[in-house]
Length: 79
Image 1 (cartoon, rainbow, N blue to C red):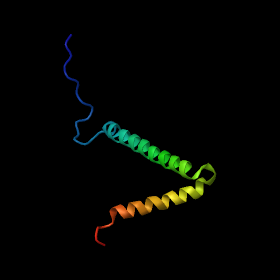
Image 2 (cartoon, rainbow, N blue to C red):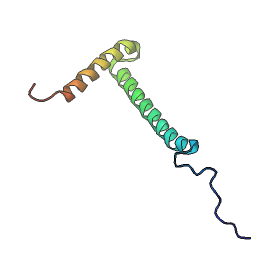
Image 3 (cartoon, rainbow, N blue to C red):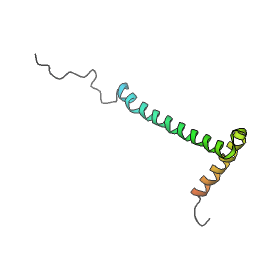
Image 4 (cartoon, rainbow, N blue to C red):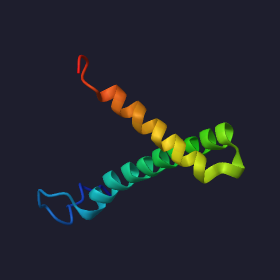
């Protein structure tokens, strides 16, 4: 018995919900892993440089260091 191609459930040109889930959820998972990595790295830097006893104070210091580094990198040369 030979089976022919199966007809699609819907022939509309828009993405189905399944296609949407297959494209968006892997991107969200990768984004969540990237944010988790960045947060863990930040916590590691704070603990190594400031110790676990001063975590909150050290976090504030490292956030200020990151802000100054970021603004220094995006600053237009000559200004």
